[in-house]
Each structure stands twice: as structure tokens, then as C-alpha cells.
Length: 249
Length: 232
Image (cartoon, rainbow over all chains, first blue to last red; front, side, top):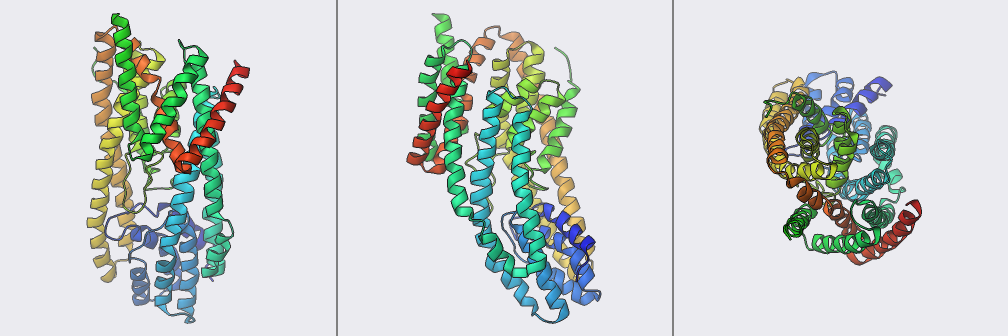
């Protein structure tokens, strides 16, 4: 059994999963880095430790938060390998079997849904004049969720091994992702209305008549692959030219 | 025109640390433009500008996610440079809040696109080091893994510090020049600032599916109008 202090060190190192990201084997360096404290403890003999380290230097890529569960479960599997109750290739097979689906789930839930929702909430709070509370609510709320997923995944992974995958599946990430994306759209519309009301020099109703069509226009172009950054630049230039033209008149 | 603005060093240092959170370490959203811009605004004692730049740049790339080997624009670099320019180049030179934000946007977007190049170079560099790690481990040097991670973190920190420093050193005097030399620029830049956050908000909608997202956004907009009217 790996002591709690070693588990804690591996968990802390799991926050650097992407530090050595490269195009050849992606997160393999970060994965091996997180495994090192456990491998040092499990394999006192040098050749066995080298072989175990090389197992974790193979190609690896997943979502960094859900990757914690795979690191935890791999530590449990390495315990079994060291005890002689599993073959070494079972560790590699487990990682290869799960990393792709965890990558897809994590990207959809955290990067494409929760992160934009947190940002829209922060934008709305900033527009409502709540100052520093805007980014604080974002960071605290987001990290509470991400932190629980990381810690639960890692420590349950160490205790349950591959069974942690079934435990995390109960969360229902796909349903949550859909709900969060809809909430983001509602809040984006809400924020546009607040922005339209707050702009100096424009009557609120005039602002509203301009704001929402612009939001819809950008949404439509973004759907066709045009970056909102490019749309913002074009709209800003048009607004500047219109101002310059009115000023000349 | 003053020479070098010393507060650029403070912003570049903070930006480099915040950039680590973007990919190399933790990923706790301190590198998100809404948060990074607010932190830089606080450091420069102008939170209002920091929040305004964060609102403007914060959602522009929310649809660009780092799936697999995809490297999105470096929003952190964009937000930090944008806020630095807005405060040190815009507000410090007498620009209005809106004009300063437009200047920050004008420098932040190209900075984010340039930052993507830096990130690509770092990932290639990591690949070169990773090959050596495998050989070292085979030779019995197990500490090579730890050293490779520390080296990658140091490289990411140094590259981010350099990128922030160079871009701020170029953009801040340029922004000051625009504000000082062109008296009408303030009104024009202020007008340009109006649609900028709306583009970011529009970019969020297709995530839910275009038609469904539009329906929910319309509902939100109507509720927002009512609430804003009441609050007014």
C-alpha cells in the first residue's frame, strides 16, 4: 500500500500533466512525472523501476482534469503489478482504452461548456458593476467543480483502480454539458441587453435595437467558422468609420 | 514622450506567471482573459479598465478549445498586453475608458495570435527534450523526467516573459503616440469599443447549437431588457 504522503505528492504532480506537452507523445512526460513518487516507492530495484517508468513514457493524451483519475487508477494498477497479481501490459491497456473517451468528455464538458459559462457569468457580473466579484465568482465556482473532479478522480482511482471509470460515469457529463451550454446562451443574451442599456451616449432602446442584431450576426458567422475576434475587429472598424464620417458631416 | 515605462516590467512578470496557468501548470482559470485582465488591472491600480478589457476579450475565443494538438490563440497574452496598453498607453495618456479599451483590444488581438506561434515553438522544443528523456531513462537516469518537466516550465515562463515584455514595450508607446498626436482619436476609438463585447457574446451562442442557442439567447435578451429597465 502506497503511503498517503506519496499519494499526495503524485496528486500535486498531476497538476503539471501538460507541462511537457509535445507533438510526439503529447502528455507522456507529465504522466510519468506524476507517477514517479509512486513508482519509486513500489519498485526499489533499479531495473524494475526503469521498466515501469518507460511504461508511462508511452504516448498519452486526455483531458488534464479527468487525467487525474487515470493517474490514480494507474498507481493502483502498478501496486498490483508490483505485488505480482497483474501483468505490466494491463496498465498500458487501461490507459490506452480510457484516455480517448476521457479526452472527449473533458473537452466537451470543461473547455466547451463550463469554461464559457463561467466567463459569461463573469462578464455579466462585471457589466452589472460588481467589480472584483466578477472574476472571483468565476475562479472560485469553476475551481470548486474542477477541483472536486480532480481530487475525487485521483484518490478514488488509487483506491478503486479501473472501477473509478464507472464511478465517474455516474456524473452524467453529457447531460450537464447540454444544460450548461443552454444556460450560457441565455446569459449571453441577458448580458447583451445589459450592455445595450449601459452604453453612454445611446438611448437604451436604441442600444438594444443595435445590440441584439449584432449578437445574432456574430453568432451566424461564428457558426460558419468565422472567428468572433475577426467579427469584433470588423464591427469595431465600421463603428469607428461611421463615427469619423458623422464627425466630418 | 517619456522613454521606457517601468510598470511594463511588473505587467510582463505577472503575465508570465499567469501564462503558466494556461497550459503548463494547474489550469485553474487564472489565465482566462476575464481573470488575467482583472489581475493586471488591480496591479496597475485600475481595476475598471482591467474588467472592461476582460469583458471585451474574454469570450472572443471561447469556441476555440485545445482539443488534441490544436493550439488556440494565446488569450492570456492578449488580455495582459491589452490591459497593459489600455492602462499605461491609453488612460495614462488621457484617453477615455472606452478609447483605452479599444486600444487594448487593438493590441490584444494581434498579441493573442502571435502568442499562438510562441506556444507552437514551445511544444516543438518539448518534443526535442522528450526524445532525450527516453534515452536517459533507459540508461538508468530516472531523474531525467523531473528535470524535463522543470525545464519545460522554465522555458514556458521565459518565453511568456519575453513575449509580454517585447509586445508591451512596442505597443504602450505606440498607444501613447496615437492618443497624443491625434486629438480626434478618442471619439473614434470610443465608438469602435461599442460592438466589441457583443461579438464575444455572439460567439458563445453556437455552442448550444445555432437555432436552440439563438432561441435561448433571445429569451435571455428579453429578460435582460426588463431587468436592465428596472435597474435603471
